Image 1 (cartoon, rainbow, N blue to C red):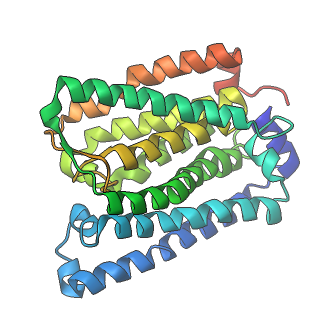
Image 2 (image 1 turned 180 degrees about the vertical axis):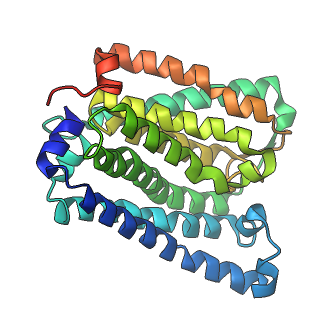
Amino acid sequence: MHLEKIRENQGGRFDRYVIGSLIIVFTFFVAQIPHTYAVIKAVGLEQLGTLDIAGILQALPPNTTLALMLFPFALVAVLVLVLIRHLHNISIRAFITSRYKIDWKRIGFAFTGIVLLNSLFFIISYYTNPSDFQWNFDPQAFAILFLIAIVLVPLQTSAEELFFRGYLMQGLGQVFKQRIFPLLITSLLFGFMHFGNPEIDKLGPLLMVSYVSMGFFFGIITLMDEGLELALGYHAGNNLLISLLVTSDWTAFQTNSLFLDVSTPDVYMLAFMQLPMLLILLVLFSWKYGWNNWRQRLISSPKA
C-alpha cells in the first residue's frame, strides 16, 4: 500500500524527513516577512504590538492581505515537491498516489462535490435567514480577488495536503508500522496549526473541534484511498468557494467576496455542524471507490 511502499523506498530514513520538515517550517516563517513588513509600513511598529490577529488581517486592503497571507503556502507547495524529488529521490507521482498515475478525475470529483454541497448549504441558509448575509459585490475588487484566489488558494490547500497528509504522514510512516499513529499525529497537528486563526481568538478553543475533525477526515480519505487526490480536490474546492462566495470579519479569510456573513457566530454550531456532513461524504467516497478493510487501512499496516 501507499505508506508501506514509501517506507520500503526510503528504508526507514526518518532523519531525512526531520531535516526536510525543518527546512519547510523555516521557509514558511521566513516567507511571512513581506506580510509583516507591509503591516508595519501601514500601521507603524509601535501600533503593531497593540493589534490582535483580526487587526493584523484588516491592516491592509483585503486582496493585498490575501495575496501576502497565501504566498508562504505557495512556496511550501513547491518546496515539498522539490524535497521529495531531490532529498528523498521519490517521483512526484509516487509521493501523491499509489496508482500508476495521478487520478485527476478523483481530484475533480472531490472538488466539484464539495463546491456543489457547500453552495447548496449556502442557498438554504440565505433563503431561511437572509438577514444573516450582506451583499458585498464590488466588480473591480472581486475581479482581482478571483485572479488571486484561482491561483493561490489551490496552492495554499495543496501545500497543507502535501505537507500533512503527504510529507509528514509518510515521514511518520518510517517510524510507526501501525497506520493509526501517523493518522492521529498529523490530524492533531493540522488542527492545532489553525490555533492562531482569528475565529479561534474570537470564539474560543472549542472551535478547534472543527479543524481537528477536518484533519482526521483528510487523513482518513488519504489512507483509505491510498493517495492524496481526494484530499487535494476537496480542500481546494472548499477554500476556494469560501474565499469567493461568503466570508466574515472574524475569520482567516476576509476577502472581497460576493457576500458577508453578518450573523452572530455560534461556536457549538460551527464546531460540530460539519461532522454529519463529513460522515456522509465518507460513505459516499467509500461507495464510489469501493473502499473496504477499514480497520486494516486505518489502524494496522496493510501488506505492500
